[in-house]
Image 1 (cartoon, rainbow over the protein chains, first blue to last red):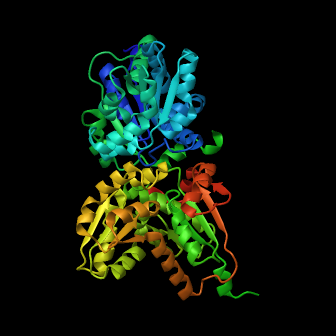
Image 2 (image 1 turned 45 degrees about the vertical axis):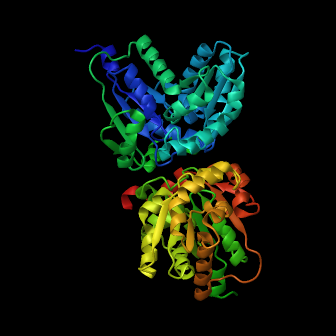
Image 3 (image 1 turned 90 degrees about the horizontal axis):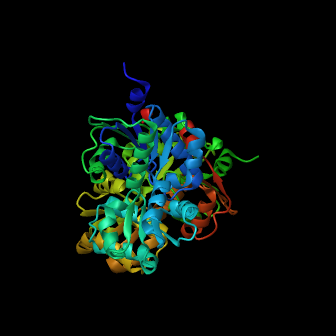
Length: 285
Length: 285
């Protein structure tokens, strides 16, 4: 008979995002902890979250987490920077599962790497407006200069699938990075799960002295530390990935490979009505 | 005592869209029929519809229409091209109110104006993929050449608020209009309610021989004909506008002026949970 620890270790890791972008976080978790089973929910029917209000984002995030909770996960990773920036308090209050966000681990890693040099962050409108990265960094390193820029067009550009050396892509990036280039930060946090797909172009524009920080990698490392210290890590074998989407699962499956680096397998569908019925109403938040 | 006709005339016109864009249609209705009361719903919490699947769009559209039906409207205008392209059959089957879409009136107007010359259309991914404009035009003018292009980045660009002579805006438009420019259509249908805000730039790129067609104007004209012929038009006085948003009503109010040309007044909030509970489940569609 297996011990309680072994039984706990077999529980999956839950991951959610507003859409496909969180699969870049799944990719990092798989690279760091290949034995873990993962259940992923992409809320593609209501994507994007980054242009919406904190109240709406919190409501959607609670519903996403409530869906994942059905799989009895040992931890839920909030792979969406926007939800991480505005919904963590609500999630920790309402969801009885340990949660890991992508903002706090990235902020800590940025402070470590920047060594006192300025830290830059780009993200969605809602992420930047929340000031979450600024607060997280100020707590750890109050003297560090911080510069943030919202970059609303980058998600639709990534979803267009245009190449990183496409003149329009470079032109848009140049505009968003203008102030950041002048400050020459030691680290630039790619504060949205879509942005790693533009890392090459962003890296060229920022130059070799700015290190780009993939928030998914920092979050995966945080999950690994959490599971290892709590004895909940799974050892040996090859973990599975089970994906759900609130919109057309076929389209999700077709696009997933670009984010995941390999096939996502069969994708299940769950309606937003079902999420809303099972999750938390706006009045509670 | 007022007659049945007069009582009917006092009922409002319902209008819905995925977000703010449908206010360009409201603007046309107000210009054509200033005496009419209008109730508007913008589903800003789930915007945009144009990147989502027909199933999801139909479900959201049915919920939007069910919300408007509470106000006992004499007609519901589907001000969203994407919903007009994929959800009209479902709406006519499930909603017991006369509906006017923006695709059919624009297609008829395009055929009339083009006089046998090619007709172009730009729209969201879902609108173009549906082929709804092509079918509507082929029914009216089977011999007319038709060319369609999806232009996914235009909605986020309009919402960025960049000027029409902005180099990035012109660069993106030039790419999307490339094939259309070669065909030199007699009419270009602006098949998304956001696009009239880029009409000046699009007009310059297409040249003076291509007439741009605002789908909101054609739909407003269709509503006027419908109400006039049915005796339901309201005469005299100044109509009111009452707006609802599923996301932050303050943000909606702040941005509305660009689309409406004047203030939208106080904006009410209605949650998507409430829409889902009152509307149709996915299983029925």
